[in-house]
Picture 1 (tube, helix red, strand yellow):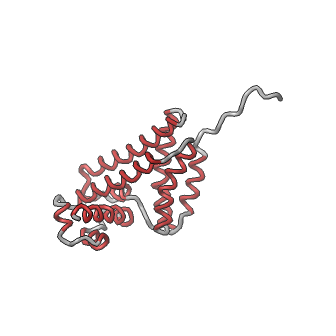
Picture 2 (tube, rainbow, N blue to C red):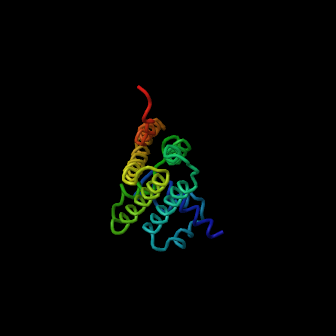
Picture 3 (spheres, rainbow, N blue to C red):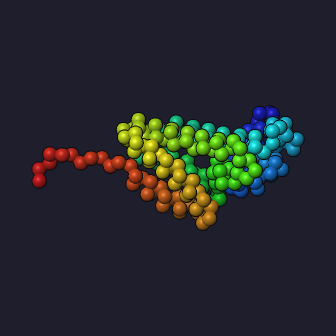
Length: 194
């Protein structure tokens, strides 16, 4: 039961930080949102808000990496569509108001600048590496795969911000359409008579 309360608090922290930013997310907000007992937050996060933020980043990263690893894509476009769909689900479920806890920390790091930005950097790099590795396995040249992966992560984070501003999924759909155009097209057969 104690682990369940901690897991609920971490999920709530990820949602709130993604939506409000780190500074505007208080322990009491997390307790209220998660329905956890009030004293449990200090029990599970004795090092304070920084520890809670790290846990929210780790949980978010586990969700993204788990989704990518479980994606049964057999083509680069299937894989990119799978990655985009993760963010689409979040935007649709929240009616455009959701954000990403990792970006929420990066943008609003405030007084916690010490190691948190390093954790954010490592997290984003792990997403790019996983996406690039999968693209490479699907026969996208490694340099191109890394560029596409980096662009996809940056584009989805930016799309989330625009979706929040507009209160709709339209920005994500526009970005998704352009991302798909980054993938290499199949080469035409040579030797056809003309």
